[in-house]
Length: 126
Image (cartoon, rainbow, N blue to C red):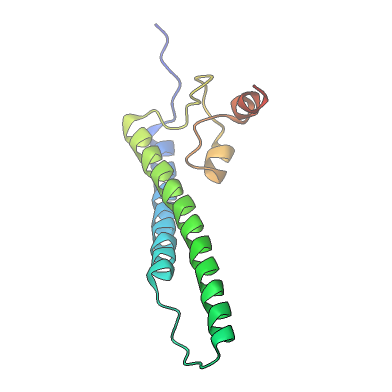
C-alpha cells in the first residue's frame, strides 16, 4: 500500500508558525471589532434632534458593518484553528478532493486552504 503524500515535519513546523502568527493577528482584530460593537458612540452632547438621529443612524450602520466583519473574522479564526489540527494530524496541505499536496505557495498565501487551485476551480464549475 502506497504511503499517502504529506509535508515533512519541518514544513509542518514552518506552516504552524505562519498560522499561529496569523491566528494571533486575527484574534486581535476580532477583539477590536467586538469592542466596536459593544462600544457606546453617543458621547456627544448635542441638542439638535436631527443631528442626533443622523448620528445614531450612522452609529447603527457602523456597528452592523463591524458585526459582519467580526463574523468573517471569527470564521477565519475557526479555519486557522482547523488547520492547526490538521498539522497535528499530519494531514495539513493535502487537497481534500485530489489527495495530492497543495503547493507551498498557495498554503503560504492561504494557510487554511483545503483545496488545490485546480480542485477549487473544478468545484466552482459544478
